[in-house]
Length: 343
Image (cartoon, rainbow, N blue to C red; front, side, top):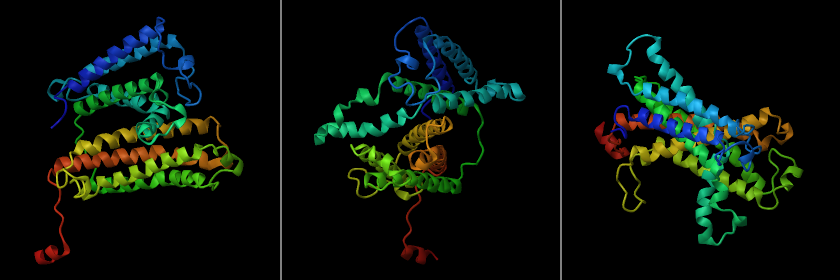
């Protein structure tokens, strides 16, 4: 069962593009809220590709949105009504994918991941009396970061429209590749986790002692929190190839033995794959810009592998979804005794 019927992803993407295009035109005409440049509270720290722009750039946003709307509306034509053959029939799909990638992976920056990572901490802080230095949700999710979520939404709608429009019946996302992707998605973040845990313990892994001293005010504890968050995510990733990723385990009251809805695993995994890929690309841009020293490799090199982590997690999620769709019933566990009787 699909969430949207035929063509609705395309219409939703076109509606998003019209709304965002009007917003871009409003910014160009002087409306407040332009999310980049001087109005961004952190225009340089996140190194957004649009950090150097100003509100008049809104006209380019409006033009780009018009292109998105036209592409999305073209994608609403289903197989029976679109040109069956020829290169022209493939143009909308070929155009939609890079536009979607631009909106989902390039326009956002690493603050998107930081907002997601620190939200659970902000929710738990009042329960335990943690002050967190006065940090609030407004600090984790200022308008420029919320705007990044809006751009991601538009890119995902366009990608869904392209996927719905195209035939896409290849069989690359096999269970075997999904298993390999899970192992990669679990292994890659462990290097980052090792450095941050070491720093919290006072071990200068990959950095100098002078660098380590900069975090004596609790900064490395925050890093250890993020590392633990990533490690727990790796454990959950294993569920994409384990039985407990298809059937709720016995220790979950009220849900034990019930089937896990595929989207309950696919949606979080897909979203996390986006934000870690975006964060990794931000660190790569920082590295290319020469913001890191080679001898401090622990501060930047592990993050540069995050796009690989994100790609592996996305692949694992797609393989899981395809496997669950083709085999709706989870495989039954077979004990050694029953297997022996079967032989």
